[in-house]
Length: 195
Image (cartoon, rainbow, N blue to C red; front, side):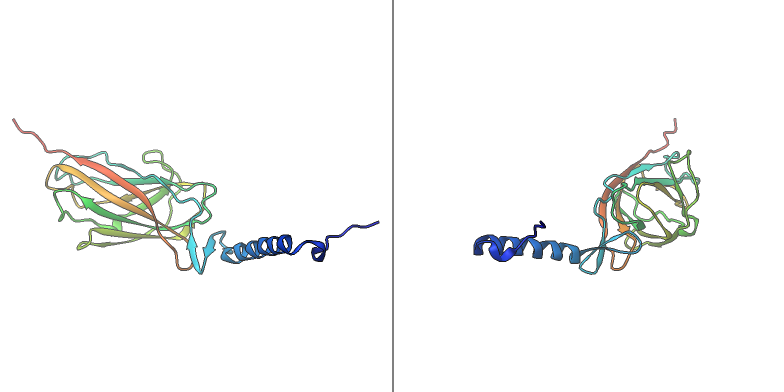
């Protein structure tokens, strides 16, 4: 003897609840569509399910005017991020010197941590000096579960000692990406005391 579920045998109240439950399951399936790239699409936009939430900023040269400075921004993309990393924006939000120049063509990216770097990652960079904002894109998006470091180079450190802050946003790879705020990286620049 086979048994099957017959919705017409339920009372009208239970039938409505079952129907609404099935309808909400179908709506969720339509709204959160996985893309071929493994990203999650929400109403035509690509989003992170679990965005990176922390950025580490390091520099090994922190005195004013040092010419060989390199600023390393490191973040980790969780295994369950829901999308690959397609790009970053890095914008100066604090600091006494708003004029020190950057060299976007010398920007580099690699998997891993500074001074323990792994495989290089292709990166395209532009810098808007009026907004103090870098726009970085990865032609080969970084899959979830990786730690990536981006190195940006100023021509020299700022002319004035201060605490400099840079706001970072992560951009998922896919159509119509919605950026997620990662946090701020803090960089202390020191003056050189001459006696």
